[in-house]
Every structure is written in structure tokens, then in C-alpha cells.
Image (cartoon, rainbow, N blue to C red; front, side, top):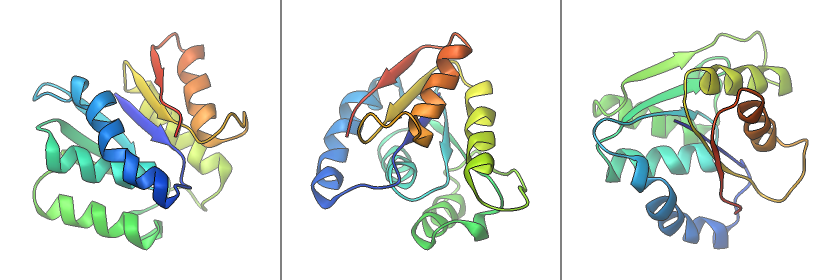
Length: 149
């Protein structure tokens, strides 16, 4: 599975995430499950933290460049869970620079290796990375679950 979502989460939204993750991630997060997560701030990091702490699912974090290029909060979460042996893999795609094309390439990489995509978009802006990823999954004929935040 791929989890994708907004990088911009408000305090109110952040307070709701544990319940949203419990309702929409936990049903898919057993010991046989494998999740692909982007290594950005926002939903990526929140989902990583929640899945690592509350489920036995296998977790892969995928970053467009390197972990060192990620925001501090994301970098710290990746390193912490990696150090605790909770991550199956950290994939650094080695893009030359961060930007829309690098994030889209990362998202396609995750979707291409998943059978299901769960998106947590903020709003309906069709140019967001979350909607790009959900739409890409649709083009690939993969099932999607969209949970607005």
C-alpha cells in the first residue's frame, strides 16, 4: 500500500489524525501488510509515526533525494524508526534536486510497487501532490481510498 497526503496539516487536523489512521489505516495494517510512505513532513511523517508505533506492518520510506534532504521532523522520524528496526527499507531515489518532478517520481515509484493507495488530501486542488498520486493510481487501475483532512 502507498500512503500519501498533504504536507500542510493544522493543529486541529493533527489532533484528528490518530482517529483517522485508526479507522482508515489499521484495517489494512496487519503483520502481512507492507506500506510505502514518502519521507516528507505532514501526513507522511504522521502516518510513519502512527504505523510504526501502533501496527506490526512492514514499512518502507521513500525519499526523492536523500534522507538528509528531508525536513528535520521527517529526517528525525525516519532515523528514529530505522534505529529501532521498525523500517523494512529506506529508499533514497537520488534526484538531483527537490521539486515537483522529484516528488512525482517518488510517488509513482511507490504506487508502481503497491496494490492500493490511501490518500489524505487537504482540499480538492487537482495540482496537489496527493491528488497527482491518487490520479496516477487510478490511471494504473489500482484501488484508492481518499480520506479528506
